Amino acid sequence: MRKISVILPLAILAFGSIAVNSQETSTPNKYTQSVKREVLASGYPTHNQKQILELVRYTIAPKTKLPTHIHPGMQIERVEAGTLTYTVVEGEAIVTKANGTKLILKKGETVQITLGDSLVEPAGMVHYGENQTNKPVILLSASLFDAGQAKAILIKSENR
Image (cartoon, rainbow, N blue to C red; front, side):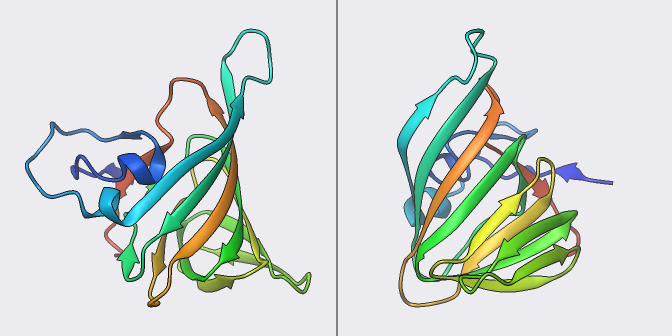
C-alpha cells in the first residue's frame, strides 16, 4: 500500500507542483535549490483544456537525490548531459539506451541513464532519481497530464 509523504514543500521547482497530505513545515527545501525546472513550451491538446502537454528542461545539481514520487500522467525524458541513477520502486519504466538497446526496468531495479538515453514513465509508476556525480544532469522532458493536477506526487517508500 502506498502512503503519500508528509514532506512539504519539496520539489516545487523540480516538479512544478506537488501533492502531499500535510501542511507546510519550516524544513529547508533542498530540492528547490538543487533542481531547476524550466518550461520550454506548453499547450492544451484539446479545446476543453482538460489536459496539458509540456516540454521541460530539468537541471539537477550534483549530489542531489530526488524524493520518491509518481506522475499523474505519462512522462518521457531524454538525457542531454550527465548521468542520472534511476530507480523504479513500483511498476515498470522503459529505458532506451543511446545505442538503441531497450530495457524494461522493473520494481527494485536501478539503472544509470546518460547522454542520449531516454526514459518512458507511465502514470502512477513509483520512482526516484539521483545525481551521484559532481556534474549537473540535464533532462529534456515531455509530459501529458490532466490540467490543474500536481506534476508529481510524493510517496513515502519503505524501500528507500
